[in-house]
Length: 441
Image (cartoon, rainbow, N blue to C red; front, side, top):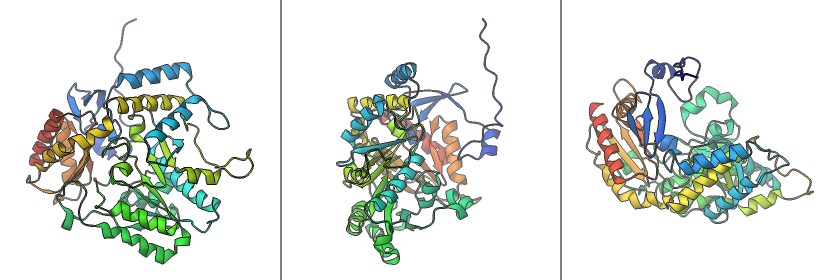
């Protein structure tokens, strides 16, 4: 039988997420295959992946071990329920993850995405406070410019205006926000965590006075805000949040969907920066982006608060059809093997000085107003174009792709977050192409 090429699909039917659909479909950028540090587009051009997919392919693309693990599992058993049933893999994966998690966070609830992880964490926090007799604690506190996915819980505690304004009347009640930590006046062009801004954590004390500690269930923050353009915590900031929440009996939730699995060094940012939350969410790098999956880590103390009452009673009325999906678990287990064998959680620390030097070579280019970098992540911020905010960032992003570099635009900030398998020659090539795009924009 002759092989016939698949006809080009119409672009009209796919409603693309977080995309200017009309702009994209007028001039599509289509990726067809991937291997290592590179994508290949539909024109056959190699494109350096400067974003690890979407912050998720931390071990690079085309990992044979993951492909084979997924193939074996889907042939053996494609699906099994985890409602009142089970299969071995999520138990094995949870044990494996508990070994690398911050000390004490050794109970794991599986989800399918970072958005689901965030909403799950918020529900755990509310239900926990009720379980321990603190039912008045229903208020949740997020932070400006935060991103916690796109569920109603996530956008309620999140602080990115465009993600909220179309749904304003339907957001969760009883939510407040801490100020963000982006301070270009005092912290522009700082290598690593900025020196100024620890006092911003003290705004939590003001909210405690305003609402009463007995009414606040949890505070949720990203250790590092990625989607808003790589916003870093000031030195001592996370430690101060931990002190205040502990003093007032408020749970502290870290959203590590982006920072988890080696992005800033160590398995999680909590370990790199020496602060252990009560609840930690993850997704993305859990399976190296191969299969959708997320997880929520909680302390044994929180878990045990639910394990009361009759043994035959369901302790937590929450979950997803695909929680602990066998194929996702297989991908995650293979991914964790790669991380351990190749010592990838240390790569962001080892390459950090070279990465920072390379990025700061862009400091004097036109319109660059800030560079923020830690681990293997960076945000390069530009002065807005006269035609409007976001235009310059998009132009740099577009020119980067034309020159063979996939970067990520967030307003007028370009974010880079390469796979942890990156080598110095890849960094050099990325910076060269980015510099050229900045000059042309």
